[in-house]
Amino acid sequence: MNISVIGTGYVGLVSGACFAEVGNTVLCLDVDRRKIAMLEAGAIPIHEPGLDSLVQRNAEAGRLLFSSDYDDAVADADIIFLAVGTPPDEDGSADLTHILSAARSIGQRLVKPAVIVDKSTVPVGTADKVRAAIAAELARRGVEVAFSVVSNPEFLKEGAAIEDFMRPDRIVVGSDDPDAAQQMRKLYAPFSRNHEKFVEMDVRSAELTKYAANAMLATRISFMNELANLSEVLGADIEAVRLGIGMDPRIGPDFLYAGMGYGGSCFPKDVKALVKTASDNGQHLHLLSATDMVNDAQKNVLFSKLVRFFGGVEGLHGKNIALWGLSFKPDTDDMREAPSRILIRALFAAGARVTAYDPVAAGEARRVLAAEHGERLCDERLALAPSAHAALEGADVLVLVTEWKEFRAPDLPLLAASLRHKAVFDGRNLYDPAAFAAAGLVYEGIGRRAAAM
Ligand SMILES: NC(=O)c1ccc[n+]([C@@H]2O[C@H](COP(=O)([O-])OP(=O)(O)OC[C@H]3O[C@@H](n4cnc5c(N)ncnc54)[C@H](O)[C@@H]3O)[C@@H](O)[C@H]2O)c1
Ligand SMILES: O=c1ccn([C@@H]2O[C@H](COP(=O)(O)OP(=O)(O)O[C@H]3O[C@H](CO)[C@@H](O)[C@H](O)[C@H]3O)[C@@H](O)[C@H]2O)c(=O)[nH]1
Image (cartoon, rainbow, N blue to C red; front, side):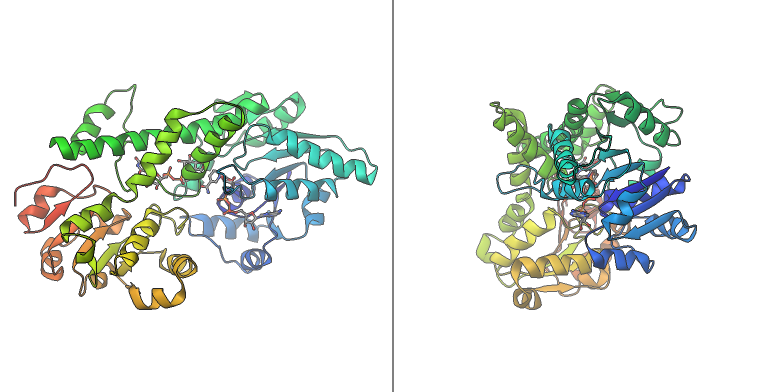
């Protein structure tokens, strides 16, 4: 099949490359010419394990093409995926500017029947708006072309995106047109294990399913974060509680990790957008509003622990805080809504310096932080270390922010010898408190029971 994918972010690039991998001809389009130039030169604009070789293989085979010209994307396509960003607007709603602009660009060029697929995460009712935008352009041109709009939300996780796409838990397709649904079934046959993973429904339910999934997962995390904070007060250990509840198959072990609050480009914005959709329709989602509030508060928990440790905010003035990890999760360089940004903001405000090491996100972090705080403040207060070890030089304490694999088994005697205040703050509960205590280190996790030193 001839596929076009509009938008070459995580979702566009991963889906485009995976569709090409199973034999389709795929054209990926982006209005960002810099991204397209990079891709044409064989460079990948994002860090995602395995993506570079997947893209390279399919580009070399001539199955994966790149363009910033809508004429190329619309002329021959049987199926056109919309995978552009839907960032949060100021009021929390999903900003549909990009998706509707892409829809208009398609309507201005469509000459043969095609299925238009909303792959971006979009509020219920967006497929109708996309349909109307395309129809208005066709009417303006005075032409009639048959087209369908279907909803096919994407559930991949950054860092595991290719595996998630190639072997999905489910493929949700919302369609009011049986022929379009059949085309989607055919396209996804190589991924859906004999259609076993294909779930067909109406368009609105598919749109809501995406938000429901992210809202449920985000709520589990906020629930565990609240229980972690309670564990500290009660002298319990959230890690033991997690194991204890996760073995109940009705609960399951995944997405029960307390931490620094969820970040990334999806959970924060999608929870807010669903709350907004509900309020626009006269309903208040109490539980989800609380999920969001708890998450915002959780992003400040480590800073509060540092303040306590140094005897007040003033105690942080002039201190050098080492950070291990900056990205919102491991295996990505994505800094969108990363908890590290909230921590760094608070540390800068308290007059502290930050020395950070991240295996891949340092460059992106520096760009994002300079845009947020200015180059000058970053030059003065932020140092990016070339290794985990180097970040400890001259540091007062260490904060583990992102649980990259290489941080899993630190050299404890080296930590104890390097850190002026011999204290480690573990934002991901990666470490064993007893081992740290035995090495003479103060250890603070999230909701952990203190071990005797
Ligand atoms: N990132 C994820 O892990 C993930 C997973 C599932 C779903 N989603 C959803 O998928 C969508 C895309 O997310 P992302 O993280 O890949 O986005 P992104 O912001 O990283 O990339 C979007 C791309 O679309 C391009 N674009 C914007 N307007 C355009 C237009 N009119 N025509 C062509 N290109 C245009 C931008 O230049 C950008 O390169 C969002 O709705 C997101 O919520 C994301
Ligand atoms: O037990 C957990 C699991 C995750 N997180 C945090 O939650 C955030 C999101 O993590 P994750 O879900 O792994 O990453 P994303 O790539 O944002 O993926 C989510 O958002 C995507 C975009 O909608 C969806 O497609 C995915 O299914 C959904 O998992 C990160 O900050 C994690 O640190 C926790 O704090 N505790």
